[in-house]
Length: 70
Image (tube, rainbow, N blue to C red; front, side, top):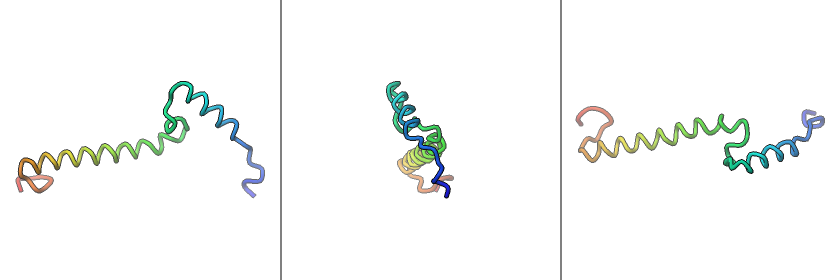
């Protein structure tokens, strides 16, 4: 079985989290794999925000499409 001989990493992670937390690091940025999840999330978040701001500006100017005059 895969989990039968797995080492217990709870104390290792606990030390890592407590040390980073004392240095005022955000809890969701502490784990080494967090960038793998946060970078695509930030790209989608700010990309969606930028696209909605772009289309809001176009709508204010009277254009109903992404590109072109109308």
